[in-house]
Length: 106
Image 1 (cartoon, one colour):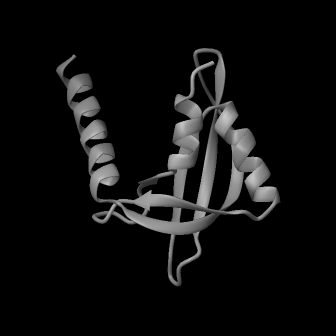
Image 2: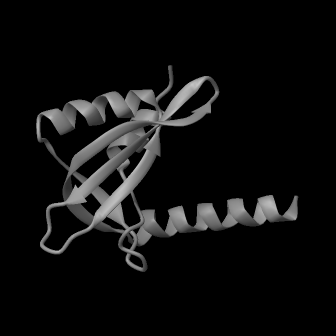
């Protein structure tokens, strides 16, 4: 049980660091695919955002169906979006647009 709490603490502290000191990076969604995982009867999707910056990498977000629908539309329309990238580890980040869709109430 202590291991679970330790993992949750590390995950939340990393997310907090990205939110408070992350770097805003413009990018485009290049991939949206279903995973084999489901949470509360909802399928989890893998969303990949590629940075538009020169030499920029990709950030992968795992989210529910509602953000995945929006991400798919954005990908098909080649719409510019942005993500917050961890300054310590550039391949780790958050996609705030999808995060806000996922947090929205029913």
